[in-house]
Amino acid sequence: MNRNNQWKNIFAVLMVLALILAACAKQPAATTEAPAAQPEAPEAKTEAPAAKTPKLAMIQFLKGHPVHRLMQLGFQEGCKDLGYEC
Image (tube, rainbow, N blue to C red):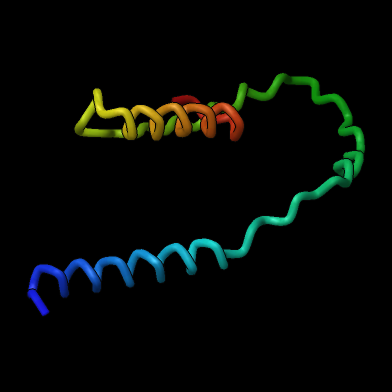
């Protein structure tokens, strides 16, 4: 067997194994319950300082690559969903 073909076969087997492992990964359970009502806190006489929103940054080297652009868009969407400032 040609050495180049041997590496291609090993790579193909590794990719299939990676796909199988990814397919078997545990998915987070979706919750449909409403959050429990929180008790009302008594009003304070002084106002508490506003909480700072955490900041996240994603650094990429290839700005114009389409795959990296998709990753950036997904990162920004996730930031919004979790309440972070990007």
